[in-house]
Length: 148
Image (cartoon, rainbow, N blue to C red; front, side, top):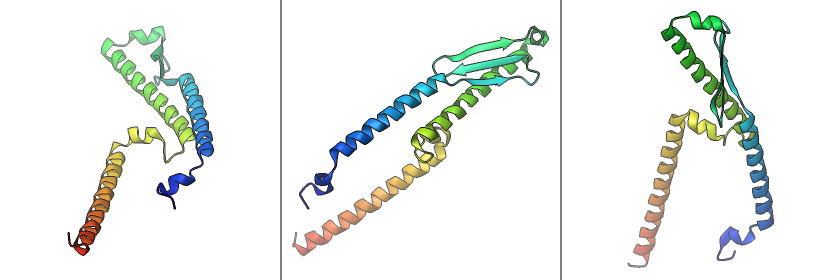
C-alpha cells in the first residue's frame, strides 16, 4: 500500500466518465423541470391556476360566474388554488428528482422531511463523536506505552 492509501489506485478516467454522466443527467433534469407546470382548479371548475419553477404563478383562468361570489370567498379560493398548484409542482419535481438521483438521494426528500434530516445529522454527529473518542483513547494508550 502506498502512502496515499486507496487514492493511488483511483481510476481517474472512470471518475471523469461518471462525473460527466452525472452532469448530463442533472442538465437533462433541469431542462425537464423547466417544462413542468403545477395545476389546480376549484371544485366547480370556475377558477384554475397554473405555476412553473421559473415563473411562479403563470396563469389564472376565471370563469365570469366565479366573480359573483363574495370577494373574501373568491380571495380564499384563489389563495388555496395557488398553494395547491405549487404543491402539485413540488410533487412533480420530487418525482423528477427521485428519477434522476434515486429515491434515497432525492434532494426533495430533505426539503419535505426536515425531521428526518435532523435525525440523520444527529446520528452522523454521534458517530463522529464516537470515532473521535475511540481515536483519542487509542492515542492515549499509545502515549502511555511510549511513556509520554
